[in-house]
Length: 359
Ligand SMILES: Cc1c2[nH]c(c1CCC(=O)O)Cc1[nH]c(c(CCC(=O)O)c1C)Cc1[nH]c(c(CCC(=O)O)c1C)Cc1[nH]c(c(C)c1CCC(=O)O)C2
Image (cartoon, rainbow, N blue to C red):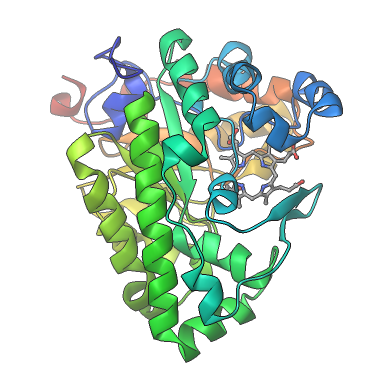
């Protein structure tokens, strides 16, 4: 049994499929993290990668926001860099910086030596965590992987970047090598996501967080075919696949055309405009500005309702932030947001859905 099968009426999975749900479903990117004092306490003893390698602890951390916030889905606690290690590249996760590679990828041989790993052999602890969670969680579990552009950017830059000069230079100067790198990354991540789904994940999200740094043309020619292949590789499993990045306003139509079930939207693009761009074949997820959580509650409430009103104008909507929860966020603000989202009645929205949609 796949996690989530227990609830055919599950609101998160229903919204992914653009089916009517009793309430608007809500979860938060980075919902397990430093805003939670209990998480910070665990991090005093364990590194992030220690947590990932310890299935019982990792399952506990994954579950914490479900119990504390009342969200409608859990996201596996891990990091997009975990499978990069399994591909043969060493890295560290540096506090307030992000992933830093031991040796950045630059040459032909570096791409050739990347391993398209076997998930059960290379990352058994991730799959053990999912199996553990699939039995115990009261809500669906979202598995995830990094998108090929975002993973390539960390590998090539050697760490976080503002302008992706090395990454884009390789893409422009060596399109053949770039395509080989994209092929390996998308194949490895599709296999990894397949293994997560087979272990019990009910949906998966591809975090291509930084792909919005590309022009529409570069995305179409150099990245989109690989994302389409990933989606096609997973299609037989029939679970929702969410594709997300920031600064992707101009890419949204192409995102919808990858074969994704759900398109994640950052806070810059209003959801009604996002809907015009993606059409009606996908669900939308997003897109409250994570900084809104620092506003006084009454201001936050208006921000949440604006997002809800725009999101619920068409079927298939999942409330989320436009990017991850910031570490200094107040946990009580997240609790309030969940409460307000669940109290929201799409029928009382200024843009009520049709009778058919609410049937
Ligand atoms: C780009 C990216 C990374 N990792 C991830 C992305 C894509 C999402 C995004 O765009 O934010 C994905 C990720 N990383 C983590 C999760 C866990 C699940 C969840 O969302 O709750 C997820 C889904 C844990 C983590 N991964 C990381 C933390 C930070 C806290 C810690 O070190 O314990 C967490 C909770 C470390 C990390 N790892 C990465 C960054 C930029 C950082 C932050 C560095 C810092 O601010 O200290 C790479």
